[in-house]
Length: 146
Image (cartoon, rainbow, N blue to C red; front, top):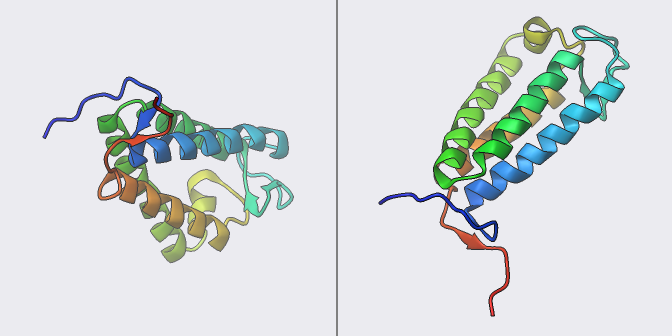
């Protein structure tokens, strides 16, 4: 079985669509975080985007993940690779966050990171891994044909 790049914007696999959508979400969250966070590392308990404590380093990581996922959505093969890679990394971060006290604070100095971050990483990582493997799927049509 060979995988060929999808050149049309109207045909995407579920894995590509996931990579594109989650990439845009992570990119927008990362950019929005720069308007909320007060410092590059650290910050106060008030430096939150919705429920999630952030700092500029955390925002840079979100932007990088977003750009990586968007870039990966271009072809079937890269979507599978990026979804799998980012899924594994986020699952590892989630597990470490649940097991090691203050893991996120020690890793990137995010103050008061806790279960909300861990669950977000768990869900995003699990979805990334799913769409990089079993859920990568066949191409789906998003346009109309005549």
